[in-house]
Length: 245
Image (tube, rainbow, N blue to C red):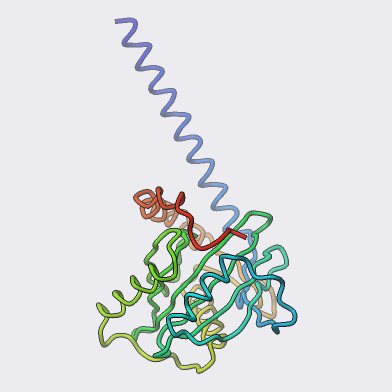
């Protein structure tokens, strides 16, 4: 009897500390989401002569996109000084899919990601990516994630999504890849502001922060991301497309 009571008490104690730890993590996530300044237009176009050496990851993704018929657009760099991200943008042969591949460091932590974007007639976008990343409270981007996949994996998955969307897929309004990328992020920012999920952090509207409601969405999205990542956890051990930097 005593043994059972001790085991039950130990179990309750472990559950208590688990809940305390989870609650603390969510409070931290909430605070960071509300404090962190995000750029309304996070990427800048840079001339070829100003580009640092691109990582093996970006080169591999870019080479594979080129082999698939994608047309090169621009070299890009992240606008935020603490984010040392460099990459490229490309446009598909039918000009209905934008590809962005980038890698580098975010506050010293290694990061790599490739996105395939296609516009739908309701103003939203299909977005296929190899990165788990954070959620999108604006609901402007419909994510499908294939963790640590090669370009061929992402392109095949994205083409399947385009086929399923059928007549809902529309042409981009802009003709240049960098302009398309800028428009996507600009519309995402505007959507966040209009829905009360974010507020501008300066008079020039160059930066924004999540509102409390937006931060709550980020916390809720964490569990969605966790659910999507768990079945693909084994993919993190695959070689992938080059190094993370």
